[in-house]
Length: 637
Image (cartoon, rainbow, N blue to C red; front, side, top):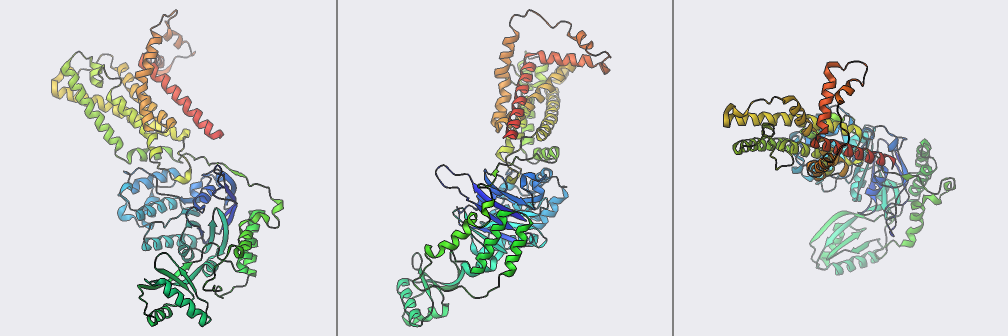
């Protein structure tokens, strides 16, 4: 069950709030529609319920607010807009990432794809999907964790009649299995046809809360749509004949040459037009919308008022029993709504009392026991994916950007090494790394930094996580997974680069340039440390500044800005030197370091003491501190 109590958005400067004191409930096993014209506050209401927007109020999902649920995605399936994701990712790849994020087995992907009818399109890319297929994919993401509750924002918007009928059938089947379904729409006919209960919003306020049968009887009326070049004359004749026959017929002049006639039939209107020689271009039966201020029956208004009072006083099982009692006590009626006169229309004075009673539940008895303001709504922090390493692996391998970057790096490095060998005067270590002295970084280091920056940059540009999880999470678990995957990628790129360069030099110049240097171990450590450090710098900077460009700029800033500063610092006069560091390092522990560990630590210290190594270490330390500070600040907020 969903219980929304006192939902109110923050005021917008001098404008009133988009949603003002909205309270309702959606029961399990039933489909509830949130109806309103565009701008009525439907999307804002859903965002307040899901704690994605600041405001006031509280929403209980089966008795618990969303921020008290350990795994919200397993309790509530959400579809608020188009499916977020990289346009080059496939449907199956996108759902696989969401599986890792919500912690469900990968086999669930095939089950959901079959349910939503995307079996033949599982390998299609997101950028090529039509509106209908995108809605199906969004519904698949919402159903992936088999949630009890579905919250959908205009799910049938832009769909054809057939696709909309299929979508409503899926929602009805979910409710039939005991689930709760809440969806928003601006079409009253869709709400009456699909939902069991209709909640109407206007101007950000709740104006009606009715059963679908009562809604259809009070708001939707049959009418005859007429189009004629002599619409005014035909309307006058119809009104005159209705008065003469003492029948209740309402004729409404629409835009252009159209009429909407209530209380008559196509046969009667056609006979009148024929008798008077009036040409008619269109004559069809329709269902007209009387607007959100259609008068509620007395029984329906009393039931709706009791429900709102119960929600505001307890927000517990008491509201359920009160609503059941009021519904049982209210006698059913099959009498049609009273027809209005030909020239009559509902006036604001006639509708004022009923609308005001329903829209302002704070004036009801029992409201004095409530606090003056509902509790504030804080934007819910997005949890990290439940399986972050699996999530990151599927993200990195799901699109071709990483593969294209790696191929570009290998080809560029091979060509540069051949060119540098032809020119000469290049040391063999730089030759194998394809690192000209004029370039701040070799292609492999730049490629590793770019791949690291894409790890977080793509999360903000093409968020793979659904919008119901809030902003892109910058949690330590996800950061550790991204750093690990970036490290493995950088290591593979470093090894493949040296191997490809050696092979190209051997093919072009023979064995002359493919000898192994005598100090290959420290050189290999320096090379791997450089590529991995650049990858880490890209990941951290992109996570802090929310941009791939910022991550790559941070990688380039290390040799361009930080290295000259470190060199200038080290080139200054020094009073003391670190002589005897290795001996003091051995004395740090009483026992001997295993496997010659002191030697490796001393080698690592020498690497850090170099200008590039020291600059990279300083940059990584600063970026990591900034990332942790940003994460802690968001948690404090």
